[in-house]
Amino acid sequence: MAQQLNASLTGAALDSAPVGILIFDKSERLLWANKTIEKLFSVNQHDLIAQSAGDFVGKKYKYIFSFKENFCLEASDDSPERWLKCWQEKSESSDETIRYYLDVTTEHQLQVAYDQLRETLEQQATHDPVTGLLNRRGIHKILEPLISRSRRYENDLSIIRMSLSSDQKEQSISEQGLITASYLLKDKMRWADHIGHLEEGELLLVLPETPGDAAEKLAVKLCNIIEDLKVNNAGQEVSISACCSIAMWVKGDNITTLLKRAEDALQDAINENHQVLVA
Image 1 (cartoon, one colour):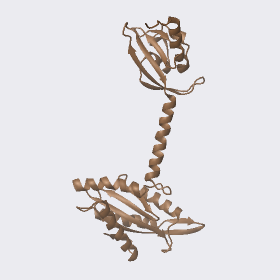
Image 2: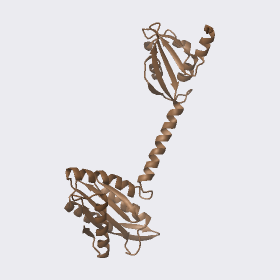
Image 3: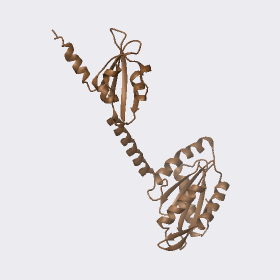
Image 4: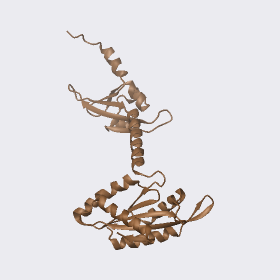
């Protein structure tokens, strides 16, 4: 036969439980609070007894006298910021409501740290560390669904592959020159357009809803703007040269075929000294 627990022992156990406990009558007047409530809310448990929501002012009292599943208690002079989880149940033998509060601050902090780490890793996986632009993986991830959309709805879609170099054609562009040109290009493009850094000095611009003639005009404009730039490189003022190829999505294209046409046309543009060449 089970031994009946001593009432004072049960009360002491509930009073020191790691979970805050409140008991309300059917009119939402507080009948009992354990000591953990004092620690969680920085209040005196005895000041709460026989009181209701209208007897207090302040956000923490709002959370005591009304039910909210998850909430944050702001930091104060005598208490750090706390995140609490709350749940409640009706007593099976009476009209009382029992409300429980669990401190989940550590779990919340871990979740925030995890989310920040995940965001950082995603940023590193899809963005170029030098320019902050999308990297090859990131820009391809953008381009894939746009090609699928064009395949389905036959929307215009153009890409510009751009090669940047110093004004001495045989020299690759400096890191500062690449950063400066990248910021300028990003500023001159529409909000719907995308730009990525594929490899040293080569960029890919993705232009949704853009026909070939509009893409060609934009490419000429951007090349001219870039070639007006002067970049300081080791104390020497250096100009940047740019040449582009343009490829438009056509029926039957996938990402591989579209990119290959742009890549081949860019190589032809470089070899034949064209500023812009349409694939």
